Image 1: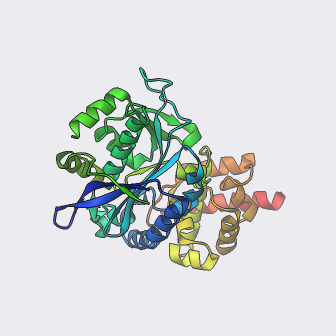
Image 2 (image 1 turned 60 degrees about the horizontal axis):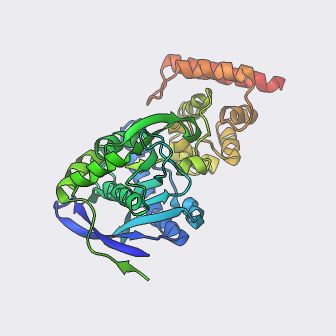
Image 3 (image 1 turned 90 degrees about the vertical axis):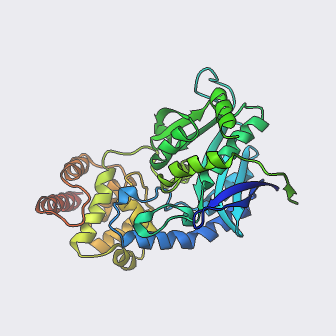
Length: 208
Length: 162
């Protein structure tokens, strides 16, 4: 397992704190993440049930379970990344890098890193309507940034592809400059989005 | 063994801008898991919205909260929530069976609506009509109640003849 230091902003006081971005997660790590997050999911769910917030605005990953994704990590092309801060998993990402190619010109057909799954810990969700402001900010941004770096490390020049849940589409487009390509009927009509090599170069320059 | 590298990642300025947008998304997430685990359907069928809405209306019509229904049907709270809020959800057969029992709805028809059995044309027609006349709301309007009762009647009738 590898570890890098990244920064997260603690919402309570706005202070940036150091966190460990771990690579090389193993299946049991996903089980631990699932266990750690499931109780908090139930709490959030109960709070949402007692609120007047329309269900269309509830977090769309509310029902996910990382434990069921653990076997995926046995695949050779799969890589798991997680951010740990204050001894808890703050966000997790699963990428694949052998069987996916770019659809966006001029990189069409060239390999990319596909982000199969990414989620931020439930206690970091910003749901002000139920008093949930989130403990750490920018967890998702740090994880996806790592996917772009992984793409560079693998010689894919920063190319990244993913299927976004509807609530996150604006995030990938505005923060990372990804291009929305098509609704994918093979993936429940989720929007497929891609970061080209040129877009990745601009992103990494801008984010330095 | 853990290899610790030096600090990396984007600048604080970039992170602050990213965090502002990330906050607006509630839960930043990427799909794929739900798809591959069969938690969502491989393609949304046209009558799926009717299933979740029927469960919601039947529950509310009986004055049940989600928690109470979960308890009565012996089904996970999360499973009911998913059914009612996500048109693409594919519930387990046991869940549909338990809900049919708890809400006194015809089990076979419910399976069709849930996408677990091939829907008969009359079910599809009735479901589309029902879905078109109803919207998720905190209380059933008179029109919604009529639509609900009419739909259940059609399901009952077609079950009798099956």
